[in-house]
Image 1 (cartoon, rainbow, N blue to C red):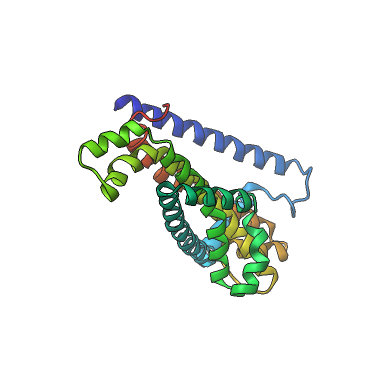
Image 2: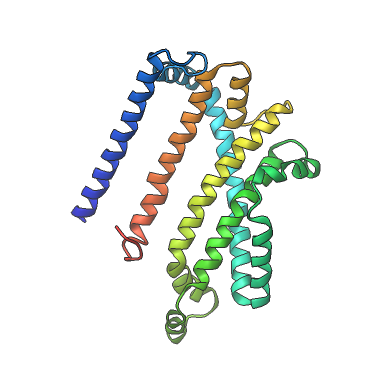
Length: 264
């Protein structure tokens, strides 16, 4: 336990030092004057502008709006992926259908279906949620489908011999065995959801609508407030790091690493 704690602390310190080094390089490069200050502002100016935007409450409201839509889209994607993976596991025909749909739709970027979604749902939060769902559902289905099918038959037979059936067999045997795949799918889906949310909000910004951080970045870019653009991007990065360290890595440390299912 002490060893693991030291590894986590060392990893965190290394990452913090690396980020600080990048920030220092940014500040020094901006101070050389090689790039126009309007297009490549100093990091100190970006942070100062970001603090002002946070105090005004605008960027916090935009962040809440984005996270709210991402939560809806991801929740729908998780339910869809779970249903599709379980049905595929129960029926070889459905499995073939799922793989065919994956081969057709998985390569499509979420933003590519936005024009159709706008025609169906209009420009608004529902369309953004639909794009987030479309972008995140495929990595979830792929990892769930692969993970559930990778469970050794002997483990399933042992569970059945212990009297486990149906939902109990899935919860006690299949899901724990496939959990590394499930966690990977959630990580990829979370990243895809952010990308889709920001891209969709930028498109809606072009059409005159409002939204979350993507719309905030688009608006600031339109008025050439580049420091605020970098500030919005910085918030997205920080949220991603927080979710990765406090959510995904925390779950991974208490599940797949503790179970010996991944390398340290």
